Amino acid sequence: MPSARSHGSTGQRGGRSRSSVRLLTAATAALLCVGALSACGPDNSGQDGGKTAAPAPTGAAPTSAAPATGAPTSGTSKPTGGGADKGIPAKAWMDVKTIPVDEAIQWPTFAANAKLTTNKVLFKGQELCHDTDGLTKDGESLYTGTARATAVVGGSGNSRWTGQETLLYQGDPTHSSGTKQLTNLTRTHLVDAVKNCAKTFPHASVKVTSMEGAPYFAAAVTLPQIDGTTVTLHEFVVDAGGTVGELSVFTTTKGGAEPDGWMAVFDHDPIGQETDAATNMKTAICGALPGCDGHQ
Image (tube, rainbow, N blue to C red):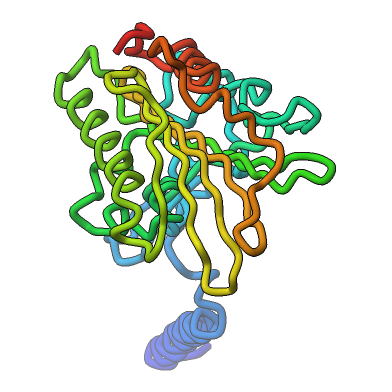
């Protein structure tokens, strides 16, 4: 029979063995954790002391700025209802059949060829006369407005005439007298640019064809070019409510030859009434954009 001392010694050795096993198991587990940290990290309960970053939500907005909601995906002007916060309505464009050119010339519609302008408007009369008013920083409010668009069409057959209508909508003047003042100022700057074309374009000639006090402006302008050709421009300007409208019909001929196809009878009305083109331009604007009663 073994002695009590021998029994105690065996028990101690057994205890040390079990302790060694536990230490070995713990060490093995620790090594496994080092090799595979993800298996030993905190669960998804959030009890990680705030030390780990939460994953980005799947619906997070992109870091790049989204395009403005008012910016169209294409250049075509589309109807936007009763206002012009997102563009110029299609029905705001004048009927090309009222353009005073030979009836044999077939014109595409302005509405189908209209393109929104993302930058400041530069009216055709200002461009051809080399007027820089619309390009200056001071003119920002005059030529930006709420919405602006331009439509360019060319005549069919042998016609060399090009028609361009530009619409600049400053806003609804019934909500602010300042809007109407801004519209009037823009119109005045455009008209002055055409009237003073000979001062900004060498050897240009300007003939105002609208009657004094007429509710529109019309002029015929010739601009000799350095290559020997001549640009002829027929310009119409109206303001309707909070909108400035410009119709420019222009062509280039060689040697100063008189271009064919323009119906001079439309240049002015002896009674002082608006021409068909100016009347139609204003009527279309007033029928499509708010704040215009047709007489402003």
